[in-house]
Amino acid sequence: MSGNRVFVLLCVLVFMTLIAAGSWFAGSQIESPADAAARTAPPPPSPILVPVEQRVLSSNVVTRGTARFGLPQPVSVAPSALKAGAGLITTLPLRNTQFEQGDVILTASGRPVFVLVGDTPAYRDMVPGISGNDVRQLEQALSRLGFDPGPVDGSYDRRTSAAVRAWYEATGWEPFGPTLDQLAQVRALEQSLGEARKLELAAAAELEAREADQRRLMGNGDGGHATPRAVELERERAKYADMVAEAEIAAKLAERALVVLDPRQPETARAAAEARLELARAAARDAKLQAEQAIQAAERDAQLATGQLGVARMDAKLAADYAERLATDLQAARRRLGIQVPVDEVVFFPALPVRVEQVTAVVGDPAQGPIMSVTDNLTSIDTALALDVAPLVKPGMKVQIDEPALGIQARGTVKYVADTPGTRGVDGYHIYCEVGVEQTRSPIEGFSLRLTIPIKSTNSAVTVVPISALHLAADGTSRIQVQNGSELEYRVVEPGLTADGYVEVTPVEGTLEPGQLVVVGYESPEDVALQ
Image: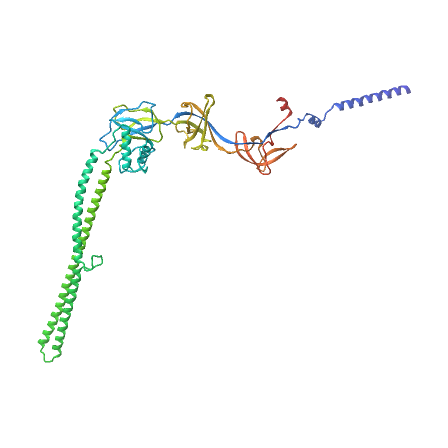
């Protein structure tokens, strides 16, 4: 019995040992969630570092356009008032013919039409005595052609006329001299001036006579406040008559007093004395009235003489002014008898040379109105700008022109930017832009070219980092992460111009030197392995 018990105990002990060993083995094979997460977590990513640089940043607008010659401009001939009517076209140029300063672009009834440089179109006959910007253009053109017009002051004088004569004769054309109408006008003005001078002399003689009468009438000269001598005389007479009448009245009063005071005098004597006194008073009143009438008559005569003098002076002034106007008109008419430039013998263009684009008239047509169209030799490029960038492009901006496939490289300048979309053949989502091309080695007309327009630049090298290195912090500041030894630190910066994937940065504190490394991103070992 005791042996069986021992065996059973041994068996139980072995069994328990086996269970404990199994439990330990099973426990060693089981992994906790934390251990599993720690085991499967990826390794920390590595920062992607790039160096800080110094470079010039510029923001560009890139578009395409087609090159062409300048826009066609019409050639019109205005009628000349110096001629009886428009001449007939006798010669016309061929298409693509080029014209320089002083060339004859066409002829009409045997007269030339010259080509000159000027912004103001020819709109009137240029004759001696006139002035204006058109005359200034003519003087400038004469100077460029080698003919001295004198001071370039916009005034057509004798020296300008002489230069025009020399210009016409040097080119083999007869200068345009005085017309029959101008000569007839001068003769008519000369005759009218002669008659006006006679009227002026007659008016002057009449004025002299009236002034003499005035001097005789005036007692104290002919000033405006002088009293006429006749009026003074009548006033003195009136004063004397009044004194005589008063003396007579006083005598009659004394006589009446003697009669009244004498008791021996009868009543009839008193009545007679009273009657004589009344007669003396009546005579005094009559004399005073006559004197007033004489004074008024003298004043009227003086006023009449003064009025006649004023009329004579006005007549003399009118006659003199009329003669002076005729003399001025005659002088101007005589000046116009010099060499002239009819408006239908000159055409101004803003720039030369020009080339004939299209001829719309034929030989034999009247030389008036539109005859042909020309373009300048300056090449332009038509392009379209998107609505969001068009406001950034301004006339005068420089343009880089190229087309690598054709080996074309050129430079240009923005000449014009439309105010509204949809003009000059572009759609409503773009704005027309014209670029003027500087001289090129090869013709580019008709080619589609790439245009690069710098709209903003730092002009000099500045500190830049890739845009991906810039971060916006929660407080609104801009930051970059810079490597400092074995660690990374954030620095606050002020961003500037952004272009070509880079941004200009200025550190708020401290310095930022070219070559320092900044973080633009992070990569994991798996990404490195895949690379």
